[in-house]
Amino acid sequence: MNVGRNDPCPCGSGKKYKKCCLAKDEASARQAAQERAAALRVASEPFVGLPPYDPPPLPERPPRSPEESAREELWESFQNADIAEQTALFRRALADELLDDEYAYEMLTHLRDAGNHTLWGTLVEELHAVRPELYAQSAPYYLEWQIADALAAGQFDRLPVLAGALADTAGDDLDQFYSSRDRLAYHGHLALLAETMARAWPLVQESDKHFPGVDEEFAAEAQQIALLAYLERTTTPRADDPALLAAIEQFGPVDQPAILADQIALITGQADRPWERTDDPEDTRINRLGFRFQGELVRHWNMSFGRAELARVALLTYIAERHNPESSIAQAVKRPKGKHKANLRTAADLLCPDRASLDRYVAQKLNFISFQLIDAAVTLEAVPAWLHFLHHQGIISAARRADALRDIGKLVEQAEPIWAQHQSDPALGPHIRAAWERAAEA
Image 1 (cartoon, rainbow, N blue to C red):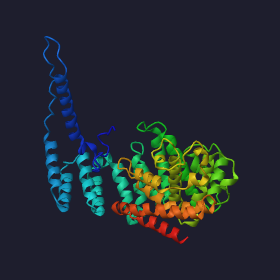
Image 2: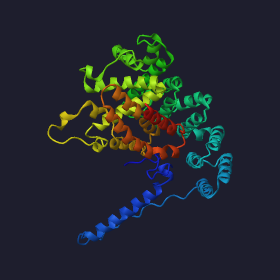
Image 3: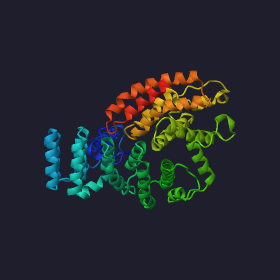
Image 4: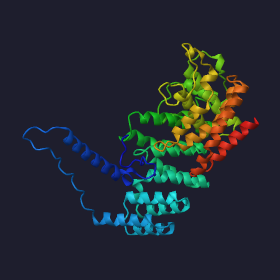
């Protein structure tokens, strides 16, 4: 795995790689190179008359500047201090202009990990006011945490400014943008999210820092957010509503109006596509079923349109990976044996989750390299509603629903400490518990 200097360290410390294990890894690499060279000298017979080859010594590191030495002394003092003294050291270094981006970020991360998010927020605002150029260098990280804290504290009046500032970073960094996008959608701030996506869109289009195709993916997701924000505020939605088309087409044209109309009808319950009454391809049937389920979540399970969208995408992604032979999720599924096993897959086998593969899917969402806490939580929150939905559609039996609820419920209990450990969003655990308690009563 190729880890960049500014990426999170693979050891899981939460620090940037260059401030954690980079020096140790470089030293190990130099030592390994020297040992390989020595082994080759011993193992190979040199040419007659030629002296054995001795590699030149590695160049010494240049001496540290006075500023670097002062920063390292500051960091050593910081690590050995209590929270009160660490706060004082940070403020002193900020006033003395001793901080650079790396040390400011590391010190603030350490203080945040100590658990006092109010103090952390105050210090970040001080950094922003005193050294805006340092704040800007790690702004996507700071803004993601600030948005999470504002949501957790119910300080919704802070969100427009924070979300607007985050949108302004989208040309440089989308990882933190997408994390906050999911968080805002989960908590039902779709109107603000639609505005944020619109503000970020020109920067994403013009950026040369993203992989090819990222702008098309961003546009498609922004169109979906715009649609859901429209459905949330409109009592009689229409696919040809000029207000809807204006909101969607700022990200690209509506190439197939009939598909848009069908999606609106499925989400709002104006149309029904029973699984057994259509000859459409399997992928189309699954997608339509997903939109119908999304509407059920809004109407009958008290989910916001944003959270229901996250649930729909998470469950359909899980189903796709569960039946993709190249996916690690599929390896956890027990399949029938024999040469006719492919013909034995029923709709229930296709759509009903199982504990083993769901466990692996959620665990991958919680991998420290690609940490997606909201996706993991909303998946488990939506499963009981999905099982009831499949039963009401006649796809699974009452017995299979009961077995799945009981078996997957054990996984949910095992995952309970995760939500308590990650207090960046204290609503996740209670929402999951409430969904499963309601499922037990249904």
